[in-house]
Length: 463
Ligand code: FCB
Image (tube, rainbow, N blue to C red; front, side):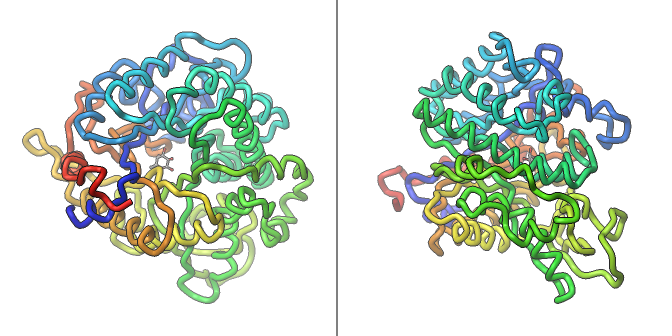
């Protein structure tokens, strides 16, 4: 622990993260989102969990701020529910929705915790999905208007802004594949969504700049793609293209990667790409958030043709145009089946810095689901503690190798609805009993509390 502490520079922020749909509940007090609709389709969420009650954060937010204070974090990353602010995504502002986040921000500041806002963490208002969602040409305007409402109200009190969370998931798991909302299963729609999400990012940044927002950036889920054999190399390149390069190239002003345009020609002609929008997407950002959990390790499969989703071809729909491949995560695995491989966090950060030079990086999510067991009222999640320790170490190694890494946010503050996995997967530092809503600190929460308490005073830390 001291080894980790002494390697953190004075400006290194440590925080915890959540997202609105996963924790808030109280869906009757806001408009509908695509995740409300999706979760009501039988079979989409493994245990049938829906938006309510989730972790009942909408009612228990003060108690949850107590958890943050107990941990001693510098920052709290949370998302704002678009349909709580604008029930239909555009039009009339719901003052009660705005007031909820207003209070949250004020109370965070009173506790000396910096508010880090994610503007969009997947809960698109259903009324906008009806217009075409992330394929609708007007979505950039709608997102800019929504951003402006938030900026006008919160700009003076927000430490960091993220326009989007993980557009790869929105576009490719939600539009190309069927495993996340809205579950379209249409590769062409996925590619267009990827582009329009980034257009919306650019428009949102323009608004944040007009309002002189501090620290405006965006959050991507990036990873290291590992081909286990030479036959998997072209799939690995395509996956790297859609998972990592497309976003970083757009941000860096390099446009859509040429190999991706070519490798998806049979799916999309990319005629929606517009030069002036490309320019707006590549306007400078103040920081980039990297969400990292696991590497993507793949191998070749013995026969030809486009990959199809079955037990051997995992999620190929999520990478439109990808040649056949096998997903081969090595043990140890988390409860999600995700390979634990901290070395890939180091390489992911290094690659990211090379592809988008000069932009400070934050790890905006990192953590693991493990089969927590409550024994005599406590949860000894040594596996999660180890995950955090080894990944913090890997992150600091990247920093020591020259990556401009400014901070680390644990996913997640508390157990919550893990999207399609419902309540079956737990990522929290705090356990939530969904019957009573009681929060219990896991051993991993004690780990962070101690780490934060034992930090050297700012003046003594390396800067
Ligand atoms: C990320 C999401 C976050 C959470 C973690 C486990 O992809 O941003 O909401 O579900 O995975």
